[in-house]
Image (cartoon, rainbow, N blue to C red; front, side, top):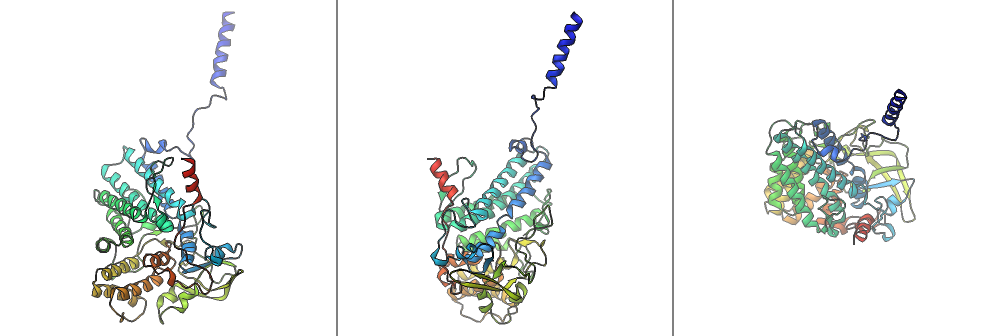
Length: 454
């Protein structure tokens, strides 16, 4: 009897041990918890997060180019499936952006919501590397410096979209974000992030011991990342009208007055499982959907400007889009990308030289400004600048050169430039019968959150 009892107890114990309802806790590798990466993180975990940060760093590219480029009439996005890419984005029939604007949705889309994802990812990188026992203090400083640099860049995207409406800069707690702050305060915050990142990079030397993508080739050392940081700081400085600060920043960046104008870090692309270059279209493809060159870029160009031949491909047949308000024809398409895996620069030497020219002009240093302008003009096959050297005249020339040198780069340069010099009214809308927006309202998700948290 005792033997049978013992066997019964043992059987129950075994059954209990095999109970399918008693499942060990498993960390989902596809959706790991934040704690899993911020408590005693391994080097590999830190590396995963850095690679993820680079991926999020590029998510804004298409909308920033196609939409903001449309606002500034650098491009038209002619879409045969949905005319709202022209009727709404070009402000036809006096359309104005609203909190759920087409192509941006309730979240503000990839130039508002996605930058905040990158900013949060960078914060996760910092928490992770700070918790990693295998990573030296110098390595931690390098990673933190890189993350802060990306944060500075990303904060400028939503700030430039909503402009006077302001953005949140305190997003450390996503369930309790800070208030909206004015544009200049947001740009000052960007400066503080970039300066903090630069200070962290200065604590380290030599190689950046974590792997960056090919987009950072030539800049994947501590010295290289410091130069990228200062390049972004120079862009930020002209938005803050800190002209001496802009000069100081470009002089510490990778600017090379005798170098390749296209040099600079880039967003890489590739075949699956990576993403293709979102701005590439097959040359002369027989399609009804394409981002095309705005016709004024062709008619306003100076004779012999090499940038026209190098950037714009004349099609054998136009891409045509008809709305109630206008018939739009795109006779030229983007020629910059040899194939669908070509990297897209996010800041380059040419922009830095133009920032230098602008800063000198604003500081009443016309000779230095003209010298920088002429580097750009000479490279474009144009004669040296021979116009007036007043500040106003030089700024007009610089804005004209920026229009071609920085055409359709993933930032909306012309729209932002025209706004900061109060020249939005000078953007020609005669061909599309539209309007030029000044800024966007806060997306509906932000407004709903404010109501929810009252």
